[in-house]
Length: 210
Image (cartoon, rainbow, N blue to C red; front, side, top):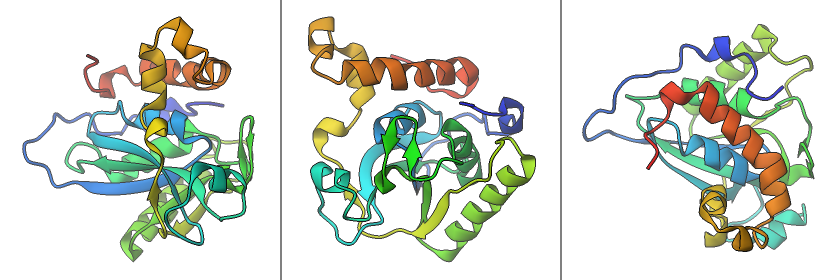
């Protein structure tokens, strides 16, 4: 049920870009960070989308450590955005429809607590907003099963290794010979269909493509 209930998201802001914005950050996890990063990074109002790890027992972890499932971290995307173009609430509504928030500790083919559906908060206001949007989505019943997304305090955020950043964007631009060394099967079968559908459904809310 990817991109569930598009009508529900119709209220997401489509305002034009202002000058000298004051930015905020949102950290969310919902499966492999390559996929969420690729979509959020194209949304108008998003200044940057960075792959990383959060919620574990220490900072400075590596991809291999997180993949073990023993550190408590989740793969996340840190979204820096201009709230005068797109609000935190709108980004959270998108988050709850761009992945399946009813899957516990997995997302599609990816299994483990590191792939859990999670929203991290830096203060009590962010916690309240996250809970409000989660409850709003649940009441709207756009998913057939209960939402299992956790809302956790942000701790031990670590930026992922450089090769993870803009992974799908690099994949799209790479020649065929290089794509074979870039998890081509996963990118083509899992990420690409979601990104293409996202671009089609939300074309009027995306940044101009270069």
